[in-house]
Structure formats: structure tokens, C-alpha cells
Length: 197
Image (cartoon, rainbow, N blue to C red; front, top):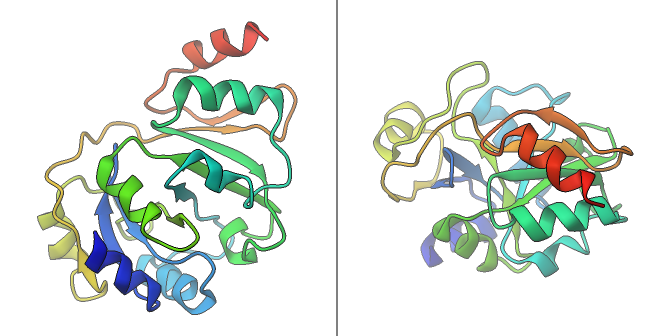
């Protein structure tokens, strides 16, 4: 983790395990690193890049407001496979938000992902899946290495990840919050928690 964090601090891009699939990690505040991330994936700039934070406190400087509904979801489902979409703070690069003014963030339940974010000065790193755009996400380091090894600067071997449908994505800028993507946390459980407010 320390070596990977050092690479990211120098503007590099690495692959690392999360609670669902392997992700591509770069410094979201380094414009050149973000551009390289898009190039590696072959991703269009009209698609945003989600972020992972190391601690709940890291969220405050990344977003403009946190609603009661968002706080409830954070309390019940973080750390875990839940990405919340907030209004982005001005410091978030436009490429990360795809010019939407919004940013998706989660506190990962995977120890390596969380420790890697914590090891960075900002406490945050990119969390887009380690795959080429349009292809399936990967849940084994050797698969990432075979497909993308010549393009990234390092791959953290963290064993096989669970895979599955990916994180559940909820837009908490809308009232009531809107489920953008069904994922590991079923929408019925999310809806049940929100009904209790």
C-alpha cells in the first residue's frame, strides 16, 4: 500500500482491489493523472469517475452539502458498496464530474482500498473499475495484469474480489434520493431505510 501510494503521489495510476472488483487508482486532483486514467480505459470524458475515501471525514471537503437522507445512508451502509452522488465542491476536477457538477463517492469496506486512500494526503483516490470501457470488470489481479499491465504503473495483489453487480449508486442531490444503479445493496433495503426518516 505504501509503495502504491507513493506511485499515486507522483502522478501514477495503479490497480487495487475493492469490495466488488479491482479499481484504477489515481490522484483525482492531478489533472495529468486523471487524463491518463481516461486514456488507459479508453473512456469518454462525458462519463464521470467515482471516488473512494479513506475516512468519513474526508467527505466534507469534497462536496457542498450533505442531506439528512445522505447522512442516514452513510450511517447504515458505509463502509460498504454504496456510492452516493453529491454536488461536487469547486476543487473537484471537471473531468471527474463529467461537467455535471456532481461526484460519486464511497467509503470502501475493503481494507486495502481504504488504507490506500488514507495513505494519500487528500484521503481520496479514483475508483473506476480496472477494465477497458465497454468490457467486463475484473476481480483478479492476474487478469488486470494480463489486460492492463503495460499501461498501469502497479497492480496490488489483494486476492480475488467478490465481483457481483458492483456498488449501488444513489443520487442524494435529488429529493427523494434516486437510485441510479442497482448493485450490491438491494434497492428494497435502501428504500426501507429512507422511509424511516
